[in-house]
Length: 205
Image (cartoon, rainbow, N blue to C red; front, side, top):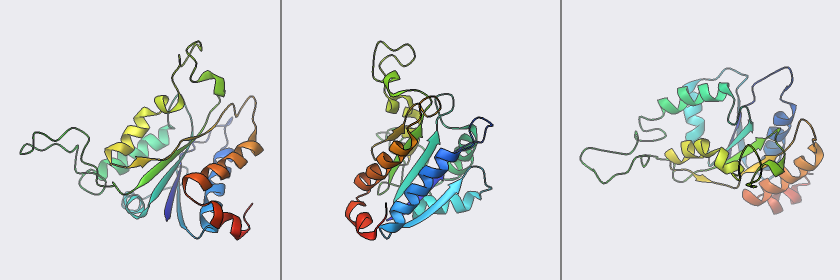
């Protein structure tokens, strides 16, 4: 398996990115311990559009590590999407929006060419877990995390990619449970990416 990790963290004085970096390191460690190849792009570093397209083509799984900012991805990753994903619309990631004048039956969004690839969202929230999935909660009114991140899911669906189960760290600023979150993430990766037995036999924690 080829795993491409995108660390979307955007630095702020109150959010230095330590948790996102730790989660990226765990994902790399787990995958490499199981004998898989890993590439990482970080929004804080310069990137080349062509190289990023090549990473998407190379990957079997794309892991998006997201510190949730204002109910979505940080602005630096939105810029990345505008540059990289737009460049990929000529056939590298999708064939436009999938519609063609000579094929009127084709639906919008069916042009993706990455049908053999999967993706996973790993999200860190200031919001507590109880804020989601409860109609009595003020802000989300019963919606869950994947409802909130539907635009991100749709971006990957636009490329015809399939989702793996989303991982979430909740309440990371006011009531962090960092060590527990890290352990849960390892187990989540082992299950979703079928790393379990190979990783444990390698001696990784």
